[in-house]
Length: 74
Ligand SMILES: [Zn+2]
Image (cartoon, rainbow, N blue to C red):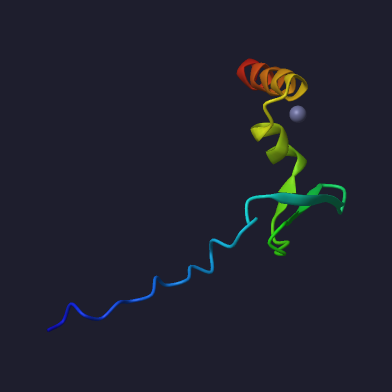
């Protein structure tokens, strides 16, 4: 009889509550920001270039398009 045993679901340390919630962005070293997350970890430095790349706002979209045009002209 092997079906009688109930295994507890293993805890996944990678998925703690709040891990995808930003708590603070701290400018660091002039080249980017350091992200602190609500689950307490604060790894991850994002460069301004990277933030420009992923930011959906109007200003960043304009900057991205201008940068792409510049590259095409080279
Ligand atoms: Zn933006």
